Image (cartoon, rainbow over all chains, first blue to last red; front, side, top):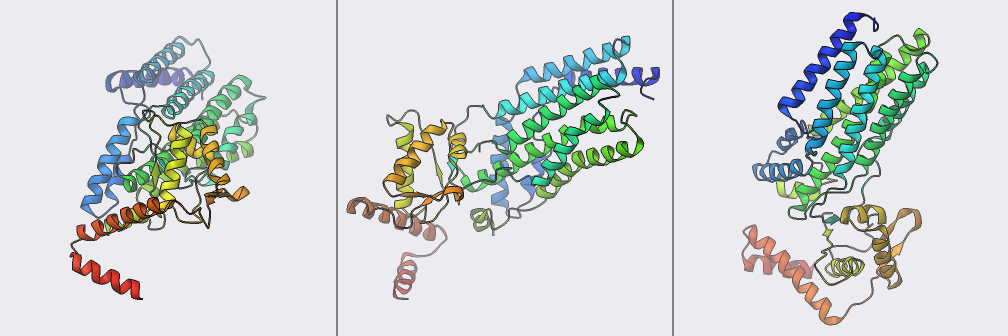
Amino acid sequence: MHNTEFTRFFLAAVYALAGVFFLWKRPSITTLYGCSVFDKVCVDEAVRARLKNALRHRIDLDQSQPIYNWLFVLSYFVLAALLFAGAVPTTLGIAIFAAVNGFLLAVAYLRLLRKPAPRAALLTPRSVLGGVPWWMFAIGLVAALSPWTYFSGEPAVAVVIFAASWSLLFAAVGMAQAPSMITGGDVAVERFVDDRVRTYHALTLLSYSAIPPWIFANFDVTQGSFVRLIVWIITLLAWTAPLAWVIRIFSQPPDSRSYPELQRSAF
Amino acid sequence: MGTTIAVDPNIPLPPYQQITEQLKALVERGELTPGSVLPTVRQLAGDLNVAPNTVARAYTDLQESGWLVSDGRRGTRVADRVPTADKRVRSAALRKTAEGFIDGLLGRGYSTSEIRGALVDAMRS
């Protein structure tokens, strides 16, 4: 299916439209999409107002630089042109696109760690994996290794997808261990926002890391239908589970054991 | 749980000493209680945006003077019996803690006589 002219032109059109979208809307690629929902988890109005303030401040800190947006636009248009002209096979074109996007995302996120900001340090030890369950990283790791199942058939595609997936997985680990970004002004709320944002960034990148291998699990590139089915299930789980976890943690109010100060203020 | 420290580059005191002094002050004021586990050197250095050696030096100094103890794999924690500080410093720290506590109660609408009564009762019990 992937070698047909229709697929090639269809994907060229999709990438051109994506380029136009990024050119027109210019969204920050590290924006905390959906984070605004967690300012609704507290019933107390005063705490909600404090959460909104802390979240607004954090979103400002986490904006990526415009250069990444331009590089995204460029990558979309170049890929659309290459596919349209038939200069690269469709599967390799998608793989290169995934790798470029993965690399850009990973760099943009990792740059957040080096942003100068007024810092205060909490004297509370944090989990090494930043609130992300270890088994989710384990599934992500297996998904990132899955391109080797079609290495013998499509080596170039496998290598490029492998690189894309691993750069994002590396960034996810980096974000899980990211330093806190709190000012010390409203510690109870800032700590809650910081913990959730760290988990959100790590889970988002973990999910992104499994998408390129999953896309290729949909193509007939793997050796044998059983292997293909297993790879498809694992990669699907690897990108959907982190997103489900994001919804789960964002819909929960701050728990009394981890955020006692917030409980005292709220109730 | 929500205790913080910061390093100010404008203060003419080396960063490791700023960390040391703040940790001592927090223990003095009772905001860091004996046995409290502190963050790892790597975590604290990352959060404060300083080199890991800076935090390691502060931790080592405090361990040598008996404020902190290293529990190997369990990390660094506040010593069970911290060194007795200067009497005046202790008294100032106690006063500051008491004032903060009373301010909190006044903010919640209790009168000074109610607070005094409750404190006396608590001391008796």
